[in-house]
Amino acid sequence: QQQVKQSPQSLIVQKGGIPIINCAYENTAFDYFPWYQQFPGKGPALLIAIRPDVSEKKEGRFTISFNKSAKQFSLHIMDSQPGDSATYFCAASIQGNKLVFGAGTILRVKS
Amino acid sequence: DAGITQSPRHKVTETGTPVTLRCHQTENHRYMYWYRQDPGHGLRLIHYSYGVKDTDKGEVSDGYSVSRSKTEDFLLTLESATSSQTSVYFCAISEVGYEQYFGPGTRLTVT
Image 1 (tube, rainbow over the protein chains, first blue to last red):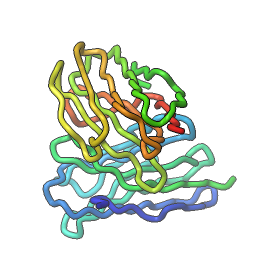
Image 2 (tube, rainbow over the protein chains, first blue to last red; image 1 turned 30 degrees about the vertical axis):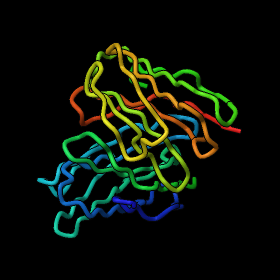
Image 3 (cartoon, rainbow over the protein chains, first blue to last red; image 1 turned 90 degrees about the vertical axis):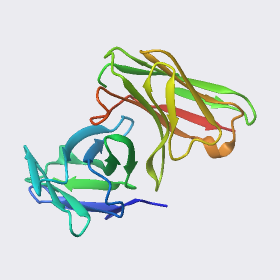
Image 4 (cartoon, one colour; image 1 turned 90 degrees about the horizontal axis):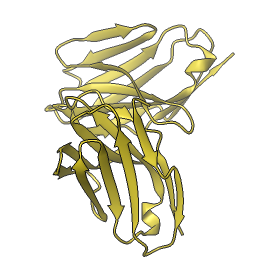
C-alpha cells in the first residue's frame, strides 16, 4: 500500500522553467515531510523538509508548498537548470523515523 | 555521503546463500536505517536501529535481520537470499531521527 502518492512519474522542462512535483498522503499523523534528490549511482540527498505547521518553505531555488487540509505537498524548482536533472522523492514520517517514500519523479531539464 | 560507507558496493550471489551487508558511520549518530530501492516503489524501510542493540522492523522486514553491536556499524543479513531480494540497498543515519543522510548504496543481485 502506497501511503504517499507522488506524481508525475517523469517530467521534462526547459531550462529556466519551474517544474512542480506533487505528493499526497492519507495518514494525518505524519508530521515531517522531506524531499530527496538522487543522481544516478548515488544515494538520495536531503533537499528540503517541512513540518505541517507552516504552509511554505524556501531554500534557495527550492520551495515546498504544504496544504494540510488537502493532505498534499509539492516541490517547486525555480529557474531550473540542467544540473537539476535527477530523480526526486517525497517522503513522510511520524516523529522522523520510518520514512515512507513516494515512488519518485524523474526530472529532465533541457538546455 | 555524510561519513557513511557501505560494503560491499556490488555483490552477486546465488539463491539460498546468506549475505551480509555492512554500513559504517563516522558521525556517531544514534539512528541507523536500512532501505531497499526498487523501480516503482521508491525506497522502503527494512529495519532501523535507535541505539546499540536496539532495533525495530520497517515496512519490508521479512527475510532480513539486523544487528548493531557498536554505534558505528549496522549490519543487514539476508539469511537465505531469494531473487526477490535483488535490489539496491541504502543505509542512512540520523542524529535525532529526522534528517536522514544516505550512504552510496550496495547493488545486490541474487541469481
